[in-house]
Length: 393
Image (cartoon, rainbow, N blue to C red; front, side):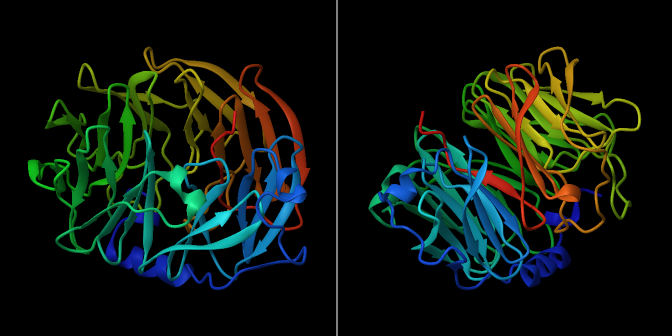
């Protein structure tokens, strides 16, 4: 089965129970205000969750700059600007000013905050418990909560939405029991396309040319040229969920699972979806190597990146499907059965890859131009999820 982090009503209940974040603070005392000398010293903020809060690292110096206390399990995603990170809390999405090391009053309330999508000049939030979609220009977060576009799905579900440059919005269809596909709305909110040929729809990515891919239990559903197109897996069950895209490549990189009844599948292959040719290629990992849903990213030239359980960052040529490099970063690891539990996680920004190592409480910075680890820091807590701001460069 696809990872239970994000599929099924029972998993959503478990996730809701886990998201117990409430309140905020800083063990450094009062967090400095944005624009102060302390805030300005935080270069390229990286946010790392732990059980009870969020650590903010200076991404250049690789030192802890802030410790924001948030009880419970928290999730983080880039807000889409060079200072902010969205934190998923029990009550909804809330913006962390990572540069200043403090939670802001910018929030989007709603149960079960889910996917945060960044595309073009838009950040799009999907709240699973309400079916609400918020789309806005993240640059306007600097002035408070932005005026943006709102949409509400027919029924709440674990979903996702993407807004394209022309105002077209692709939104998943579903209920708490099933998720069959997606619709597309024009800039005025009128439905212009629909497909219910994507069982278990989950996850999104955007490829070169603004082609959207949505994961299905039997392949990928593409939205291209104003219509939905299905790209099927070879078998009846070949599930794609987590995907990552690049504007420099027509190929999407996705996970690929083949065991529908597994309590936890440890995939040893991945998917490359050529959105131009509308073909799905399944590529094996090195023998005995798996990965998790926190293992996938894209490099600055559109290359695929997969953090394997062998502790290496594997570089994939998305056109040929060949593994061109395998760079040692962390020790060998095994994916835990519970999706909320820490495991090595990957965050990429520009030429830098940041990798957590829960077993040693470390975070490593790897230079993607050389494949070398150029810095490491040991934390006072076990790192879980990792994200960050967009680069100011």
